[in-house]
Image (cartoon, rainbow, N blue to C red; front, side, top):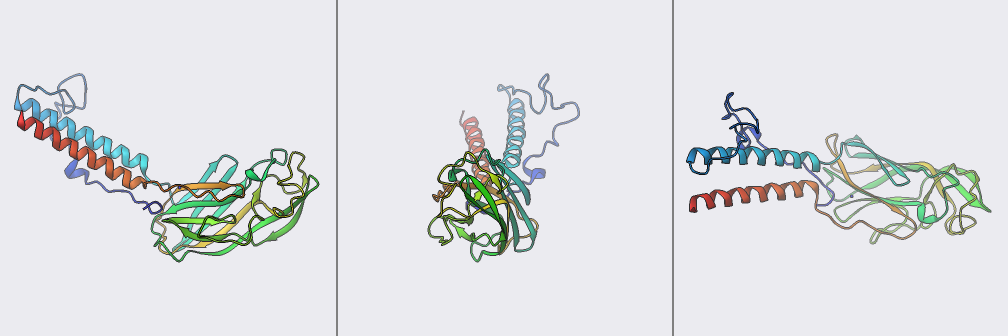
Length: 276
């Protein structure tokens, strides 16, 4: 969810995607000869129109790819399954994270539904030195099918870099270590009253109790992050087994790859035309 430092590739549309050669008498229309109309392959003039069409279409495709693959805004709220995650750059080098499990008491059945880690990328991050400055969350004990609130305390979670990105976790993937686990995963519901459907991995489970409940809040020191930083590749981990995300190409890299492929293809078309 480099994997965790994304950028948007800028494009000089004035030079590479100019359509100024299209006169007023040649509007963008598919119903008549125009900058996007089909070429007359029997003439060099027709080929010129064909290449104009290729350049214009290629520019539109590249622009669409950049827009589609651009990272999310710097302040994001993400909903995934039973999880709501908030990510915000509050100041230079500071990121705040909120995590909530939005299951109801009746929907809570197993610890496999509990949130135990978050992975994400943020642009500007220098790749080391991340620290969890503070955290807090409401705790609850669930015994005999009933939840009892235990007060607000530190979450026991840790923050670290992992691979080329960041993790915030209580059940952490190697090499990150956290002795709090398997306690303090984030359970759904209110934290009090009946948890009638909770099985033995929740109810009266000594190693797993207490749980966090409601919205857990975290403040991270993330070197290099600024107001222009953006978040992406957010991955939520559930249960008591560490399952870090697989490394994937960053969206900016994918956009660059597609743009390069389009350029190479364009060169091949021109060369083919010259040879023929």
